[in-house]
Image 1 (cartoon, rainbow, N blue to C red):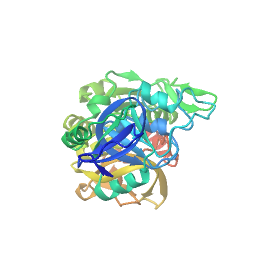
Image 2: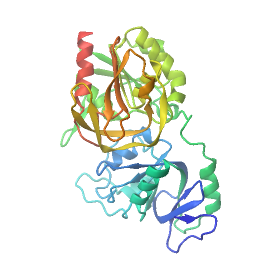
Image 3: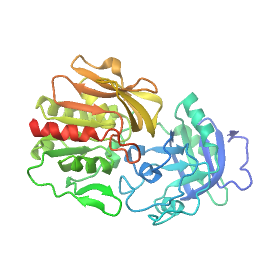
Length: 389
């Protein structure tokens, strides 16, 4: 790394990452022209870059991909988890090549440009990953200028001035704004997304959208539920007006303690009313806060499609998809909450269940997209519980 205060831009560099401490990494920019400030994180997935870029949980973040070949299958209209990409940008090792896949609609470079997202290629992404592991997730500015004109000192100052994700409520920025019936089933090659033709006889799940991935809703439909999606700011009364058989708490970005200012009272009221609850990722953290536990900012977070998680009930290990920078502090769980899963990477909590209520949650993403399908059973488990509640 070079010091932004003393270095000039190397010849041929059209992109740069500048850190708050003034250090910089140069490369070749692609996608949109401009700059963006956020938290740098790394993702170890080898497939699914389009799903990753459109995961609302990445709001406020720039993704450093450890897999070198990102963009080689182009983009399409199906492999998205939200209407737009929420990651601010990405860093990749190899240049984005011409797409080679029968499902391609447009090249990744063009897709990034159309959506206003900045990319940087030609970077030693493994070195950046090691830096994050040692020093934690840093605040950075990523910039792209085809002429290579960068004010490095100004970019460093911008990175230093950004407050970081801790204390930031981003769910309010990415949530859907209106109530809606979810209509899509799980995607199948050659068939697309089947329609949700669920009748009134199916259990009704009200999903609170804190920045949800669409495949979560698809899997709830596949498991046999009728799904209504409400915004993150939905009140207890608005949830109950839907006459839910159960409530789902979605994933999402930002600090759970900040989102919890309005979400936790609603969840606590649902627990008091004995409404069955299932939470994922941010929803897991919010359930933890609602029962009196605390959440903590992780050193580097967990992001990838290959994370081993141990199920404590029987010792089975699930390979999971993860994307989170905060975690439930297991030492703060009350007596009526038992841990159900732990990460085999660092021992952090990955699941809880209430012993006196029909409520459970997991830190990882059982819907995958991208990732393994070891944990699809959780959706069926939740919906089956609603049939007997």
